[in-house]
Picture (cartoon, rainbow, N blue to C red):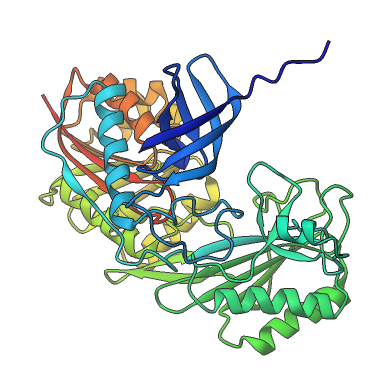
Length: 469
């Protein structure tokens, strides 16, 4: 018997909100929530559902009866296909409004937290060309647009250097111009693609696991330094050096030109040897006179200007007088730890990634900071009673965990020692709310400040100050 199609078409549905993961939100006639991929709050649309669950539908707007006054014209020719800037069709002031609402709703609804008057979200001065790191993938069978498919013409040029189509691991959209990273990023990417194509350097085929060129990473700093990392699948010295020498000649401003030869199934470089072809094996970022060394594997906030604002807020919330012992949990390369060090007696950073701690120690030495110490290890295994006994009871804890938030054992340890103040920096206010609810019996939230690090996307950072009750 034929399977009945459960997908529905809902007509003239008003979009009322913007939700998690950048999707628009509406209500269906049967009361279920509808998450819509391509609409803006205020639109009135027909929605073709693609998935049905007990409490919600997922769908796509297929006809627009009314366009929202919150809309704006996307600037990128790849908008709607790329998937990287889902909110580019929404005016920036409304992006900020929905990000602020998400943070407040998560803290109140999920965390059941009593909030003080919430400070308005801090928007980004630059809403395009703000990223300092971009990664692009090569493909010998690029994603074809609907127009190309319908044209009926044979497509000869199939090479791509760009981004994965959302949800498709083997399909790459060729990018002509990306509005996320400032020049010379687009010039470098377009040159690499053109040169490789003209010189018959094979682009990677994910399904067949063959080809020469795999990924291209471009990192820049506010001081004008540039790092290029080309990842090759095959170890072909002649072809590799042909491309790298061409890059060096065309862009003499490159500070660090590096490569990786990675023949394994996935393209992560963190278990690979990075080889410096020309220049330094690192670049430097600066902030308030502090220099931070960034290598190919380093984590550094991808919006340098907003990272500076984020760290200033964290330092303000820490309210250091100069005699405090500060623990910086999930310290990464120790950026926040060093940023607050001049205001503290001592700062101790803990991080699970050995390479990050190595960078943190080098940066501290370079910045002549003798009141910071860094330790490596799994947070819940390192941050123990014996660690605290050895290094001292913290007056202030700054914590900036990954998206999953803090492990419950780490939260329990904080409750066990009860520092006077906690500054919690988060890239996921839902898991932050969960952790705050566990701390709520012992701490009062006194300040909340959302910071927009990623304009044109739904992502938002949030900083919370907690004072001991």
